[in-house]
Length: 211
Length: 127
Image (cartoon, rainbow over all chains, first blue to last red; front, top):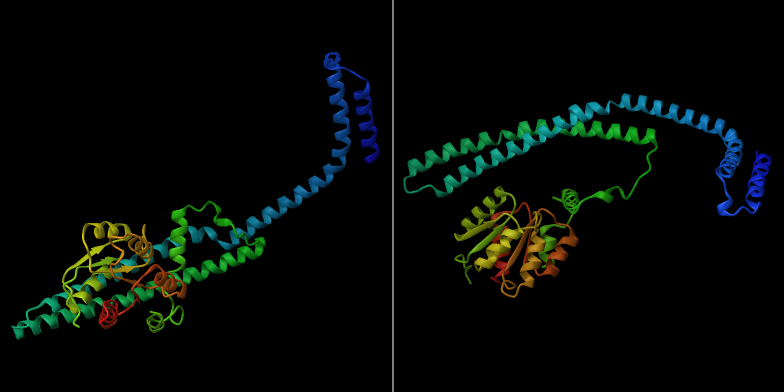
């Protein structure tokens, strides 16, 4: 290939060295130059053809293989079914806890503001409101079950993503948040912070000592 | 010296439930004049309309956080002396230090109870 290239390059140089001025260059000259250029590239691409063809074939096989692997991971099930269901479970948890909290607080407020002068009426009211509080606390059983389902979904998702990352050999990209808006950044930071787990952060006693 | 429970208190939190809890705890402690705001921006607006004797604010709120509210309050000469207690579920050391540097009077970690709230209010007023 190198001999052919040298030969063709020499031809082009000869052509250019003929001392043609711009006004003397005819369409025929341009065509000749294009022909010489094409000849020189042709010999180069001839040797490249097979290598590129082989490389493209390998890439096509990799893509087909990857598609099969992705199909086995059933990611569409996660997107279409499991994740939306988990979202609905979490919405239901928020709703149930809010409802229970309001019921309990209303009961407590009624007890707080009740007239204690009429002992019988006061006792009856307290008894009734305590039952309301007990009933409201039953939300914990249902939300516990809902949370377990969400945790299962997260575990399944984690497993599939880990498998996917391993199969695709995805490198960690640190700057994926490049297109993040300030509002998205803030929401993410709030999500990452939030309440501390037991044993993490500092205690109220530590804070008191600090103040 | 007895705690002056006649002072107007502003409770700032984006969770209505939390506001309700704090309002009830304050009521239990004898504070009856309690206003509320859902975030720092609303709180700042209310503080410019009325002089509060105490602000009790959450940290995590949108669009203006309790920390940003604290800094705004401390940088405004007409509001800078207002006693300010931060109430938050976040107890990271850096947050506590940042709040202290910004001039918070006390810092309460959620969840908390009436005696804790009372002791912190008393500490703020030097009782």
